[in-house]
Amino acid sequence: MKTFKDFITEKSNIKTTVYDFIKKVLDSIGCSTEARNGSTIVVYTPDRDRGKRGAYLQDLLPKCISQGAQAPADISFKLETGTKGSQISCYFDGDCIKILAKPAKKSSDGTLTKVSAGLDNEDRMVLAVRQLTGAKDEKDMSGTPINIVFTAKAGHKAPFTVNDVVNCKGVGKETQDRKKADIKLITKNGIEVPISIKKDNAEIWESSDTYFGPVAKDIFERLDLMAQISYAKEKQTVVTSKRGKTSKEERYSWKLDKGSEIKVKITDPKIIKDVCFGSDILGSGFIVQKTFTTTPLEFKDDKNGIRTFMCPVSFLAMTVDEIVKSSHCVYLLIRNDADRANASMGYRGLRVIVMMGDRRRNAKEIDISKLPPLSKLQRELVRSMSESAE
Image 1: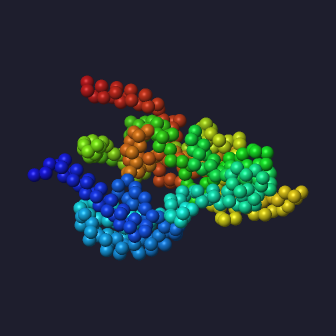
Image 2: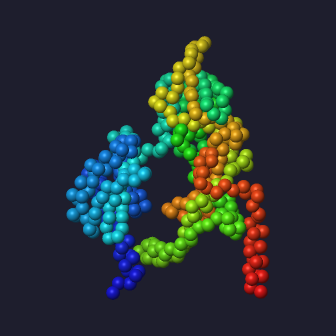
Image 3: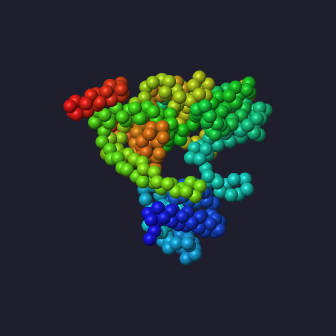
């Protein structure tokens, strides 16, 4: 008779085998795929429209079904549609592997590759500037200078001009030391103006499990000791495999009850500077919010041989104060996320996000300046327990 350990190990091996089989099937019929966490396979398509990606999966479904007879287990393929889009669910042996369609772009060799949600937005600005100046690449300083006037509906409302721009380069991947710039405008004098770009539908400044983890942990534990939040705490037994050896690990997962998600308005200038402007923007550049079209710059006039272009944006910020006083003010949100293993906060199942403004209406807003220190609450708990024991 199989032991529980043998059963779990065998089940894990079946899932790995089925996962590899499904990925090979998708690869063999010409799909551009990416493996994700052993439970999800991403298929890239050139369609950014959610409906078209759903239609793509609809066409893919019969191809998967026809190959299913050769699978190492009894697989049932089903197209399912939810609020977040469509997926093909591959059910087998009480388990499930998901096939998701994601938008992609073509690389130089014609293959489809993953595209970042904000990258094409930055690319449009870089391309527009280079087309107007004639710069060939990011190192070319021989372009024809142009002036760019940024105008905003909110935040810094006075027009701001960057003069004598000859080039623009994308720097969105340079995130070390908390750099936040997505592009840099380069002037004929070699001055680089860093700009952080957020799309119009952006709602968060950053996902901040690491940066805000200890702060969120302190707030959560203070509220817990004061009995101001309610949650479910579930014990889980997880079987892991490493170097051919399996082991069991017991851990807990937390889930906040409805109305117990926590939000805190952040007004500390240093924190806002780090979160919004990072280490490279404040004093040197600015933040804009805009979903750019293929023509982000609009011709205004040509004076003294220098062409001037307008760049209308939804929001522009050059100072911490402009963030604090705007609808983009910084809010720390502690919310549920079943897939999150938040090591810095220490509570699996909870996630820390820095929101642009108060967007979580049902969350419990906390003024941390009015909360007693954690050490005081812990002493009171120990005292109460001692008195109860007596």
